[in-house]
Image (cartoon, rainbow, N blue to C red; front, side):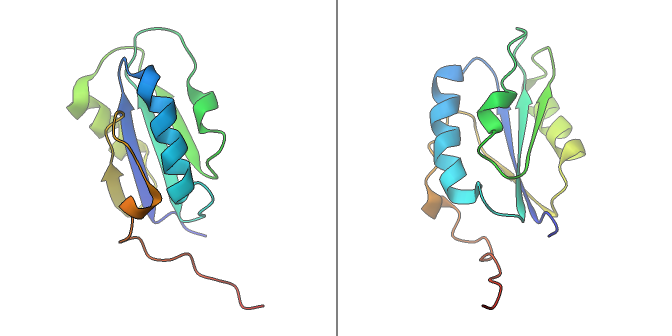
Length: 111
């Protein structure tokens, strides 16, 4: 299936809420074939946060190695995203599955 939606998160010094918010997001899109999560890590440390993305069917992790700011992080996310529709979510945003009601439903295969 083609990636239709790219959810882009830029993270900087918010590990304490990032994991919790990714846990909510995985309930909304984690098993969808038409969605990907793009995590742009603006932290300057050498911590590999890619392990936070294992629950997502389609995910991409990019460690910038420096704080590129919101605009630099978004530009990086845009350049790496595969989806036709880009959704930006703050790393400290609380996500609930009903936050994405406008996404087209996942096509069901006839049984």
